Amino acid sequence: MGPLYYEPFAVLELSRMGTPAASKPTPLDPVTLAVLQGRLEQIADEMDATLFRSAFNPIIAEAHDASHGLYDALTGDTLIQGKSGLPIFVGVMAFAVKAVIDKARAEGGPNPGDIYIFNDAWDGGTHLSDFKLVKPVFRGGALNCYLASVGHWHDVGGNVPGNYNPVATESFQEGMVIPPVKLFENGELRQDIVAIMQANSRLPGSLYGDLNGQINALELGEARLNALLDEYGDALVANAMKELRERAANVMQGLVADLPDGVFSAEDWLDNDGITDEPLAVALDLQVQGDTLTLDFSRTAMACAGPVNISKSTAIAACYVALKHVFTDVPANAGVLDPVAFVIADGSLLDARPPRPVGGYTETILRLIDVVFVALSKAAPERVNGCAYGTINALSIAGYRGDGSRWVMFSFFGGGHGGHPAGDGLNHGNAPISMATMPPLEILEAAYPVRFTQWALRQDSAGPGQHRGGCGAVYELELLAREATGFLFGERGKYAPPGVAGGAGGALNRFTYPTAAGGQNPPMVSKMVDIQLQRGQRLRLETPGGGGYGPAHRRDAEAVADDVRLGYVSAAVARIAYRCVIAADGTLDAVETKRLRAETAP
Image (cartoon, rainbow, N blue to C red):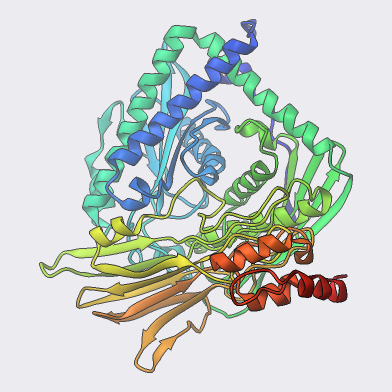
């Protein structure tokens, strides 16, 4: 079969929010529209906050690896998203809600009081750790819209505690797979479904707490939405939804039209798939033609044996996130993608089919975001930043406490963001797929038998540029328990985060683990399983910095001297990369710097 071609998304019809298509829309003045937009966003934000404050596992409670939104009753398209959750979920959940719509329709539903649950990564996107709950909202007996909640559960079975299994060759090695099923039927909780899920988790109590947090978030969202509809009327709110969608589409169309016509290409690579140590290409040909943008990924590698495959819904959602990073003024809803078409090769790395493993989806979508940035930098360098560090470095450590109970520490770690037209990249930020934060070391140390012996910025990790990238980080943690087993799923061990507009790439990712012969790096560079740890042994992560923006020799020399004094850049790299001479006391040698730049600058 040939490539899959996705036309720009259809325009939302008023009838999709429960208003008859023939009825005349209620006129909206700008103030009322702004008020309704704020009130609707507040509903999603309050759902986010409800889950964050009630979740049992730190990945949701502290890192905010979750999201909520309102979705169209017929298509599942995103209407409103929360501002605190993961943007990648917002795009993916449109596909998840559509999967529930199809399931309910086939069964003669949905019905009031139903809530569907599932983690099918090929139908609803992302990976098996992310559980989606979808609730239809009825008004006067008619379906109005859907509310949805998604959260990353701590452990859902599989071969590796925490579920990031870098050597999985099929989904069954990554965790339990739950297709769309009713968790609530006509308002009654199905305890059998809960029992099945708890029986497949190493941490059933954590699972139960997170599940109830998501249920509560949906219940609160429904109550807040009904109050809003009672106050303003269903027709007026439906009209606001329609107008917000159309505005997003129109703004995006205008921004695309401002780009120069042409084809702008970018290529990047994943280190390997965890099974075979061969690079995997992620390639984009971005075509601008008038007010239409086509993202053609035909040159990307085919699906692989290991767990870095992603579904097409995840690929499209990642592109949504990348475009929103570049075109920040566009309202966040499905209208963003109306003027965008996708070409994705059937059966490729970006179109995984079950039971292909997809546990490491985060690494591949980060590479997708990077190639979008690099391609767009060739069309509009004034809009685009260098690439961020490009890996979440999913680390899990598991063992047993003295009383025989199981503990599983799962966390992800930060790095540098790319330099941009207005300044330097962020030091030690989280991945650009999300609004999540790294769990604080105090939380991790309080919850698990580990101690961080280092948590610091990494010198010389930032990509040189007129505006340098942000610094990556150094994390070193020591095991306090008698013994445990560690696992790492990372990337960017071979291919550095690229700079743009003449900027250089950031440092490579580096991981060291203890062996009988001393510290060692993984054979697969960025991925490792079954690291046997004893009390007092340490794991060490050195994460990449972001790519630079613009040629490094154009960076203000005093700014380079500041970087050296702050420890971000060494004097040696200042001389080699920036053509700046910094004295031992940290001051700039202006005469030597001027001479060196005159001799060596292009």
